[in-house]
Structure formats: C-alpha cells, structure tokens
Image 1 (tube, rainbow, N blue to C red):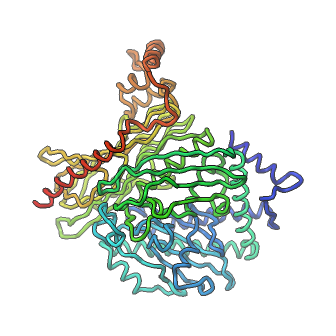
Image 2: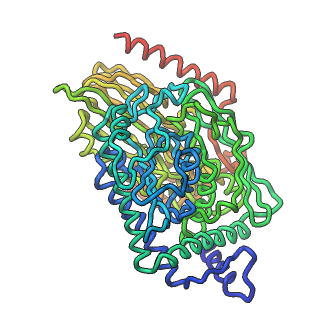
Image 3: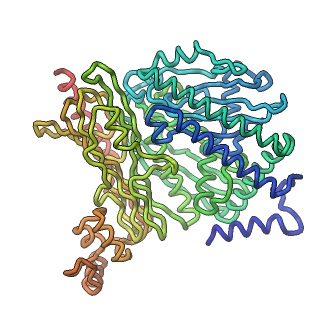
Length: 637
C-alpha cells in the first residue's frame, strides 16, 4: 500500500506546475527512456547467462556467485547491484580514462586497490571499456567468485590468516586485454598460483565473455536510438532514481531524530570476539546520514570487511527500494544523497594488510544492523535477522591420484516480515542458487546423505522466520574441509514479539561413532573415508507474537516438519485434536495460559539469551582452545 502511495507521490512531483528543486529536466521522452531502461536490464541478465553457461566452477556455474554491471562513460553504475568501482580502479591503475581504447579490459582482484568494491581475493573484477563510432560511451563490468587464488589453504579462505598475504595472489589493475589482444602472460601467472588452474582460467575467460556481451548490447542500443540519445538516457535514468530515493527519504525518515542499533559477529576465527557493529541514521533535509561510529576496531583474524562507501550507499538505497517500491531502478543516481561515515581502522574499514577472506560473516551482520535501524525509523516492513550463508570447501586426492577441490555456498533462513513468513534455506542474494546434489556427487568423492530444513530453527512469530538447513556430507576420500560461518554464539533477532532463530552448529562423526563438535570457522580439518559432517546453518528471526499465529499455519508447519509438535504447544500454544487438526477451544485456553505466565513485556528486538561480554569472550576462547587441541592431535596422526 505504501509503495502505491510512494509511486503516486513521485507522479505528483513531476505533474504539478513547478518541479521540485531536486528534479532535473531531460529532453528524452519517457517512452524511449523506459525502453532503454528495460533494454539495459536485459543486457544485465544476458551477461549473467553468458557467464553462468560458460563458467565451469560450481560456485559460478551452479550458484551464480557473480554480478554484472553497466556503467556510463563517467563510470557511474546505470544497472547493476553494487556501486561502481570504475573511478577507484582507474585511480590505482597505470592507465587514464583518456588512454583506454576499444577492446581494453582491466582485471583486478586486490580489494585494497578498489576500495572494497570486491571484498576478498577470490572475487575478480573485469572492466571493459565500450566505444561506439570511436567515442567512449561506458563500461561493462562483471565479477565472479573464483574457486581458488592460492594462499595458505584450499579455497583461499584461511580462517586463521593474519594478513592478506596469506590469502592468495593479488592482481593490481592490469590490462587482461589490450585492444582486444589477450595478455597470456598475466593470465598464466595468475592461474599458476591457483590450486585449480584450469577452472580459474575457464572462469576468467567466461567473465570476459560476459563483459563482451554487455558491451555489444550497449552498442546495439546506440545503433538503434543513436549515441546521443543513449548518453542522455543514462543521465536521465540516474536522475530518475535519485529523485525517487529523495522522495522516499522525505516521506519515510523523520527529520530531527536519530536511530541507532548494534549487533555482534561471534568471533574472528582466532578466538577474538564478539565483534560489535554499531550504526546510527538520521535525516537532514533531502539527505540521509549513516554513521558507523562505535563499531569495533579491525581484528587480527580475516573477518574484516573492507566496506566500500559507494557500495554501502547502494545497500542503503536498495533497502528502501525493496521494502517500498521495487519498480525503482538500482543505480548510482542517489550516491550524493546518502552520506556515509565508516571509521578508518574499524572492522568495516580495516587498514592494509589486514586479512579479509572471511568477511562474509561481518557483511551479514551489516545487513542485520541496517535493517534494524530502518525498522526503528520507518516502523513497517520490519524484518527479523538473517540466518547465515557460509562457504564450504572440501579438497584432497582421489583414489586414482587426481586432485580435487570443490566449494559451495550454503544458505540459512530469510527473516519474516509483517504478513509473510521468511523463506527456508535461502540466500540473501535473490538470484543465488544451491549446488545440485547430483552435481556434487558426480564430480567429487562424497555423498550428500541429507539436505533438509532444520526443524524449529525458524524464529517463532505471528510470521515465522525462515528455517536454516541441515546438509549431511559423507566423505568418500581422505581430504580436508575448510569453512567459515557465524551465529554459533549469537542469535538472529526477532522483532515486535517475534523470537530469534536458532544458531548454527557443526558435527563431525567418525565411522567408529566418535562425535566432534566443530566451531563455526575451521580450516584444513582432516577427514577420512566414511566420515560424516552434519552442517547446520542458522535460522532467521520471526515477527510478531507467536501466540497470534494462525493455528492452521502452525499445523501446516508441523506437517511439513518445520515445527515440532512440542514447539507447536509450548511456543505457539496450538493444541491438536484427535484428527490432527488444531482444537480451537484447547488452543484458546493454552494461549491464555502462556500469556498469563509471561513476566516481561516483549522487547522490540529479541536477540536471544545473549551472555555478558565477558562470558561471551570466555565461551569463544574456550571453544577455540578445545578445538585447536583436538585438531593438533588429528594432524599429528
């Protein structure tokens, strides 16, 4: 409903007698502009398909861990998902904008040399300059998550790294293609430092093919509408998004108030934690301010997240767009409207050479904190906290002597919003996919013996959070596992009476029955033929009082195995009759009992049974110490 009001208000801005001072007029007609906008959206999706269908590693080919972008000739993102890094990359490269020519493609994977536009070394970015009739008209960009770029452990995500030098080969901005000619020496050197050189080469070439497809389609648009019309459309699309975001900010964010929230990442993989993220938001006129002052300093371990300011401006705007008016185009048009402060030397702005390989766990908490700040300010479409999305790597040597290495991303629960349950076992990124079990079992020596939603991991609520997943691996060859996860000591919060989701958990079960509880971040844990790994991701927070949930919805969750019969009675207050359906009278009485037994009013945000900071630190360091002692014994065998 509010989305309709928002669109209506935008129409009024442009139809009344005088245009507001933040609206700039353009000569291009709206029909042509809409056609070019949708053509550019299709270009982005074609770039996706070219890359996904030509890459070979599962993390790109099967899971789509890659992002395309089209930027204008000033380097501003017109369509895409993150703010554009073009100007930063050029600043750190030996080339100037004037020196770039048709067929030039710049490659870079060093996060520090692009201000965190990609945030760890396995992510490589390619930037292709686009020319039409010998005139520069923009850029086609694409990045993808490679399987391995060297470093001290398979997958290039060592959880105990203390500097970026341990995490893999770093490529500064270099020309992978010079006027269309591939630089074989650069590519060979880069692949030579990877444990998966064939996959790395194939994936880099696939990323380059994606940028080539994007560049050609932009040229086609220029051919159809004219170069000048295309350039005018780029400016108009940026301004249209800017105007829409400014209208949303004016409409939704109260002026004169400050909204603040903090949450914690468990630890840095070395026993240091918890790690606090603190965000304050306020509005001044048409501008929105987001300040990370109060966030903890960078840590020794590799969970530091080098947050690009332009990227976070994009995140902040995308939240408004997704929650209120999804018809608004994501682009860099509102970059000057959202003001961001990220303290230097913090866990969100670490100084080189701080390690970055496991930054995903802090990125996840960033989304939770941003969502909670918006919840305080807006008060609608309020969601709980996300589950987790860990990386998992299994490597070793097959019986025939061939080395193997796989990597996949696992998913947790998506939080509920008012009126809608969260998604079970889903990615934060809407277009990511799970690696099919059949793919994993065909190409790697393992069996996936279970892949299911975790019962009772979903945060209870009038609308429940999404469940995490339980994925059970049976290893068929000796090897090593490495993964990073979080929410083992903290919980995804619930909102407005909703309960937090369950935390994550990992168990390694030996054929002789020995069970080992593993922490949320490990590297190079030896596994043997027949070992079983039970990998459980976190659920997500619920929204609203669980005692207000529709009893029939609870019954469905019980039938599907998402909620246990015991939780249905004790948490949701739903009592079933002889036929297995909710008994209305018994359910009413049970809910009255549960309500009368409450001693405290529900808090706005329920973060679960969080211990004191001292207890939390002792729990984390003790868990890490016990694991290290066990691992030392295993490696010594």
